[in-house]
Length: 239
Image (cartoon, rainbow, N blue to C red; front, side, top):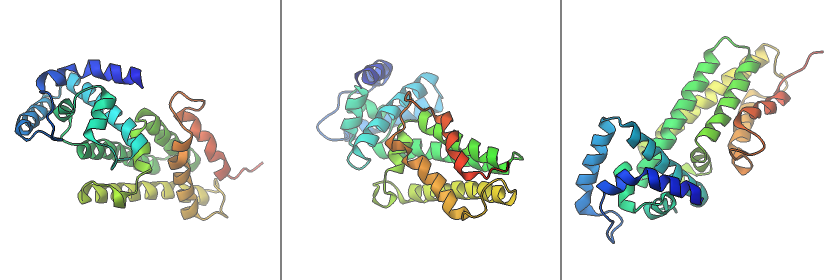
């Protein structure tokens, strides 16, 4: 959107001042050491301004990843969406792979850790399930649309590092296991229906949230928090 691009342009001016205009190559080799050093220095300084501007670039990249898919997205596409030249993009990220891996990885790790914390809590299973779904949907909303760009991708076809793919597969298994633990405890407590297989219900919940990219948008008729309404079908009601 034009408004998002113009805001990002204004906030990324500092990056444009330190980065020279791009050349015909996708990444100017003679500028790489200088940009890498400046990026490293800025991160080590933990500059709030740098972090805020980088986050806006991440948001722009997320919109392009969601629209075009990761493999079809180029640095030029991200730069255009952000309203900056592509050399400025390299001031904030070494590559589109770095943008994707770090952003998705941080959010996935945080969501997994939170699900495990909820599963270990002393709350009733119904409340834990509700909290898990609501917090995941709030994450989709808060980090929109980068997580939706990820769930639509086939990991086996992504042009990313094998190490990162294995890390994400581990995170997903941990998340699945935490949710399965919650649902199993609900069955044992007599809160959830006992006639439904725990594993199938678990993947049904995960599928429900993952496929929300087809209808959910921040600012729409349903917020991330309202997703708790979808848990009602899993609960047994004793009148």
